[in-house]
Length: 414
Image 1 (tube, rainbow, N blue to C red):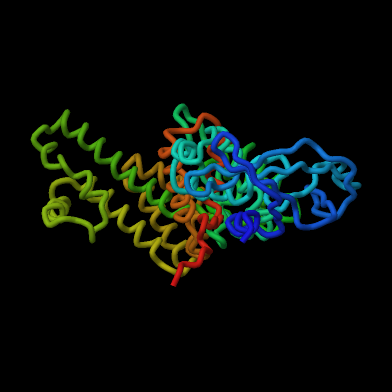
Image 2: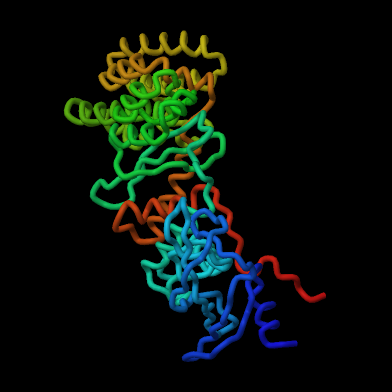
């Protein structure tokens, strides 16, 4: 078998001919050329006439064991009526400006999905910034042409990617369970930028937007997609009531400490018994709660308000839930508990968007899960210096990109 034939087999790339090889500074340099005769535009891929040849270029390829491998070829320039004067397309590299082969870039991206950039840099012997550039090209190549197409049910939330209140706004598709858009900031202008990119026609196709109770996101959604139903995340709504219980407990502690120091001891250690659901209480905590109606009527009233609110949201009939919530708001407003009076005003104002959860059964749980994965990326990288770096890694790891590891299709010897 000829050496060039063996090298072509080892290269395992379609439409690539191995013309020869050289050894330079311990690296194996393969002299290659495309197998097609007519030149093709690297922009649109169409067959175009070539008119001159550039200096030979090297493309870094995956190593053969411990040997560094480069592909060398002198590309031609082509004149394309659509793309202008560009370098011809080569089968081993899909991006005209890259100096790495497609298998090499996908191997880098595969490892970057699973570990930090510094480890990828050391393993492949490339610069840290080069890892980011490769990731950006792979995401651009493998993601759908327009990830915003076909959006119907979306969720929006913010993510802190760096200390100092540096945030990203992330938009998730509930139907595909994928992050589809990200941008620095968490203001109404940031969310408006998403709607600008989406366009008026596709904005009209949106039916549901889930979110927490952020005023910035609410104002942008109400203005840009008035036909879409805003659904407040159940967790954040219940968190308002739980916070009211905890605030009431602190007020009672301060009041009793000043007036009745002995009675204040009876409510010490009640934070978690009051906040935990009944099925998650220890026997000791249950015993503490059973004596609460006798020890402190105000805290017992706050606990009943919290539990009844959770029970209402467990129901399945939107009309029944609305009626029950109206009764709950009336009860909380007359409870003589300042924290619950305040919460009752908020829930009355957002009643329609809270009841919408019962109808659509969509929450920000999916978004929070993807945010946790994105938050892990920031911890793995020990923080990102720029929003673009954070977004680039989020798009690689949280958008459903499937990158095969190198050598996956190799057949083992029987």
